[in-house]
Length: 303
Image (cartoon, rainbow, N blue to C red; front, side, top):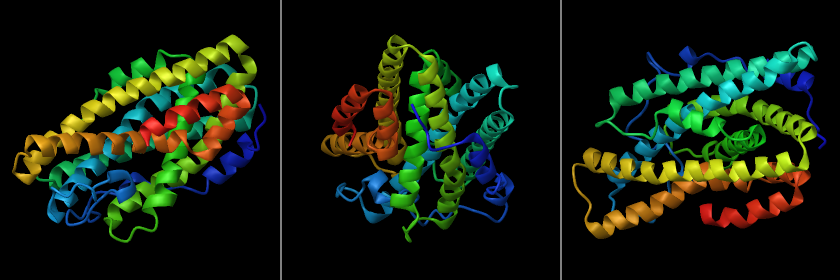
């Protein structure tokens, strides 16, 4: 594989983004619970005509909480993976070492950011919201797979955050500005992480046999199945959280619609939007053209 990225350039660009968690959330930087948190392309609320406009705002906020919780959860396995990738070659390339350690430090900062957001959300929202986990258990399940498979999942996640912010969040004037600020600053650093993820995939592909690469592709799909199982559970949690927040129980037909619409919304948010990102597909195609075709055939199920 070849890459247009370098550790030195990526490190230099990442050093220009230098925000602190304390500057983004807490104190007088409060969430506005009169506004939605997630854009329609991710929340998919317009077709849920059995909800009032106020209830759609509530569900958008529940989904927004789940969104940042889920990214905090995946950062929990990204952090040790990056450190494990950096450790064997600490003395080979100083720029590589510094870039990967900065990458790890930024992921640790993101975990802190999402925890701070969760605390702010719980303080202001009308009810508790359940989420899948615990993160440590999911992280162990993911990291038990082939490193190339894990690296591909991480690469997909990083490109996904770019698509979400640039295509859906940045120009949405209805969303809560504080929530948008969290997503913008997260994306600012993930924009550099996509390059480092690509370099990690390249390094793993160069050092692996054809059989290992096939194993990595298969494990990428297996991790996707783990994530999809979690999303199905999250839909049930969101349904219960919504009913508590709205103070009413949906009838059986409405619950069926809720599950169907929101499962596809979650699948698109956390799987489909990453699987279809052109930069992710380009990297996979260089790794194995047949694997790209396989992913392109899988993607419609998560759209």
